[in-house]
Image 1 (spheres, helix red, strand yellow):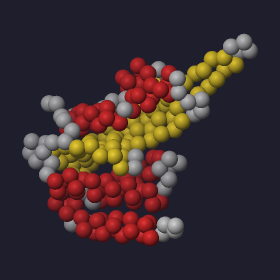
Image 2 (image 1 turned 180 degrees about the vertical axis):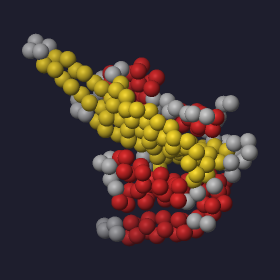
Image 3 (image 1 turned 90 degrees about the vertical axis):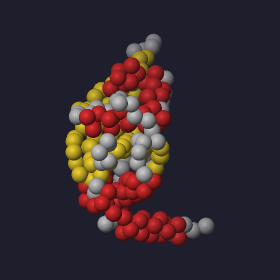
Length: 216
């Protein structure tokens, strides 16, 4: 089965890929819940400094408001030394039919983000200093029975640069350590409906407060 992207949105560090067949309300519900989870986690933790703790709080919000965990998708940390190696190991993994379909949709999303081009620049000719970046890829799709599935793929790259000086010449070694953690969920729309207005009001209130604090 080949999945196409019905829509793609980027909010903060989360790339959200929506597959076909979701209704407008279902797409809005998914976006609202993901916004709420991001806002809640970011209120208490710095995403860049405490990445795994931030991710735990993010997933906690999903599971409290309508997401039922169905699978855990993970790779151990991997050291990548060249671009070909990176391109091979980047793709999210899936176990079981639903997770595999979500992984396909995540790959389609990441092609739009040009993550591979970013890594290629670093590994082949890029920055002189170490770099760290992390982001989420959240694919969502509806299966033939009408159930909605989504996954949260959290990816973090630590790129290191080591320059060895041998007197008359020097050697530069570039490595990327990549973490790829994912969780697959079934999204219970009826359960989420009980939280919809509460979450919408809370997000609206917080955004209005943020605007009023701006001093010109």
